[in-house]
Every structure is written in C-alpha cells, then in structure tokens.
Image: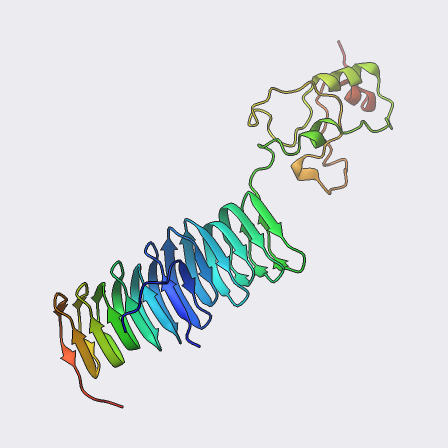
Length: 107
Length: 202
C-alpha cells in the first residue's frame, strides 16, 4: 500500500524528506528529498534540493539535481534548473529546462 | 502518470521522515516522523503512529502519538489517551486525557493577573490567635501592609484593607519559621522593647 505525504502550499521545509511512498509538494522544500516511489512537484511547489526517487512529475519549480530510477516528466508548467538523470524523460512543450540530461541506462 | 490533485492538507505519511526546520500557515497531520523544529500558524495533529522529536510552536496541538520536545501553543494543547509526551507545555488551555502518559512542566501563563486565585487570596479564615499581643501591636500590624502573593498594582486593583492574615511569601513557602527568617521588628517597636530592657539615660 503506497502512502502519500503532502507538503501544503504554505509549508516551508528546510531540511530533508525521506520516505517509502509518494511525496506531493505544493509548498517549498529546501535540502534533500529521498522518496522511494514518486515525487510530484505541483504548480505552487518549489523544490531547491537534490531529489532521488523512482518517478518524478514536475509541474512547479525545481532547482537541483533530479535522479529518477524510472522516469522524469516536466509538464508545461514545469520549470527546472539542474541536472536530470533518468532512463526516460519527457519534457512537455511549454516547460522550461536548463541543465544536463543523463539517460544512461542502469539497472 | 498525471493524477488529479486530490490531496489537500499537509500530512506526513507513516513511513516518512521530515527532518529540519518546518514552518507553515496551515494545519498539519503527522502520522510519520518529524524531527527538528516546527512553527505552525494552525493546528498540529499527531496521530497514534506519529513520532515528533521537535520543539513545537503552534496555535493548537492535538497529540495522540509520541512527542518529545517542548510544546508552545497560543490556544490549546490536548493530549489524547494514546498520547505520550515528554516536554514542557505552554498554553492557556491544556488537557490531558485519561490514559495519556506525560512528563514535563505545564505553564498556563500568569494566572494571578487573570484573577484566577482571587478567592484564595481574600477569603482565608483567620487562624486562632496563639500569642497574646498588646492592643497597640495589633493596631500597628493592621496598619502595616500585609505581604501579598502577587502585586495588586499589576492586577489593576488598589490595595484592599489588610486584615492580619498569615500568608506565606514566595520565599518562605515550605520553610519552617526560625528566628533568623522571621521578619525582625524595627528599633522602636514596642515588641522589641519588651524583650530587651535598655534603660536610656536622659
């Protein structure tokens, strides 16, 4: 059973978040994110951190390195500045991205 | 993977750890682990699976899990039966349910200023007189201000007429009165004259 942690729009986390399930960010997270299942940065979300997860869905602002074991998707509202590392990447039309992309396939 | 935004309200899931400085303007539910410090303009709910190792500054706290740290709430703190709290509580309203485990100090603010203990201050029955005092001494004692537990000026009241009430001052509560701690009468006090007979040469 997958559990979901939600960081609300007015919440500011200065530190690290780690967990097994899914993380939904509607607020601000600075530091480190290590979430096993998925990280979803919503439109109001702002993440200034190193992100390590399985699947990442970015519709907000992300600054830092995003590492996903399965895939990363930047939606039209997504704004990212930093390196992306994932075997599958989708950058939608309208998204803003600046950084390196590494799609090196690793198990 | 696009999912509709069904999640509302901040919630830390059971297998999550949030570590660091956290602040916010909304309610928060902790079912997982929170470490560091939390400042919330809202209500914090700690579920039975929640473990909080942090100092908390919130509006309201409802604790049904484990909290190790000081809790400061501007409105109320409620420890539910499953709650286990170790730390100081500062709030105008505190409730600890039966079954809860708690260790720490509770501070509900300055109760004297709110007139909470008015009854205790003015309706204490006079104890039976043990020592026979000459009438002049009794009159003198009546005129002198009695020790007060809390400043009346601070509470906005003028000094009430003072009957002779035995009130322990803050510094002597629990202490046995001994000649060195008892207030000593002044030089010209008739009581003193009784004990020391000094004949003045005119």
